[in-house]
Image 1 (cartoon, rainbow, N blue to C red):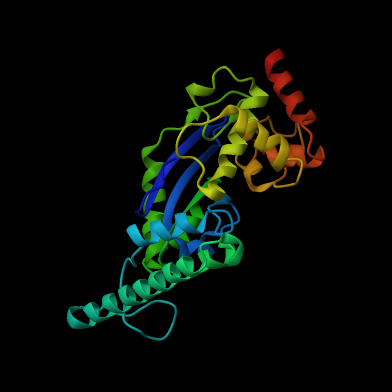
Image 2 (image 1 turned 60 degrees about the horizontal axis):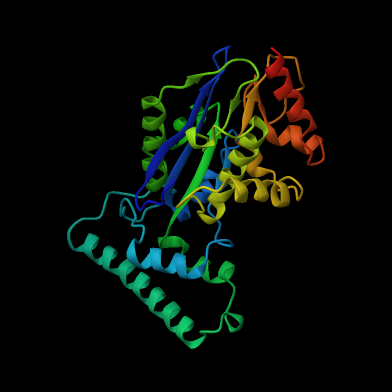
Length: 295
């Protein structure tokens, strides 16, 4: 996954169970200030780029080189939706206003960094990065079996324009994708491909989880490392209860074979709930893998 500087949606993994339930994982890039609206849709599992994890210098450079513009400039009026779109000198004045605020913010931050070359003397990135969020891009990986309400609410003329544009891109990407048919006890594993053929199934599950987790600090650029991914899973994710990335990998299991939890429709069972009930272990996962191998 490469960081982009436009509103974008890209299908990462697309699967369909033997009984016809589709599970899609999609990588999205959009205006950072629209993230709260993304978080409102609980039928989706999410892993997002974190302002606490990405180095401030990286965020600042991206904000300078590729600021995230507003999609529209509507006029003020009562209510959540803006009025008619600004035009002529009014549009120009609005665009210049926000460009000036961006430039002043960047200049002040650059001066602060110059005044504090020793990182031990400056505020942490979790604070400094917040000042850039309103004109920065962000990335979120989404996985879901149900998209209808998301499209009903967001691919709509009354939605926040930036989020509306993203919803259109997500809808089009899913419509253009063909899901891969899976058999019972097969896994939906985002970011797993041919380069991972030599891994065991358990290792693939762990590596997929780690790569979903890397979204938090945009760690997908460059070469993938099986060793670092497995180390991240074993030493950081499951053992410390960082459950969110474990919600993307899922296995399709015939209904009523196991209790069903989570926000995916049956027959999809998320890795998170197997490992969480195993107190961070993989005993249940290994049993499912063994069941597939003996089928």
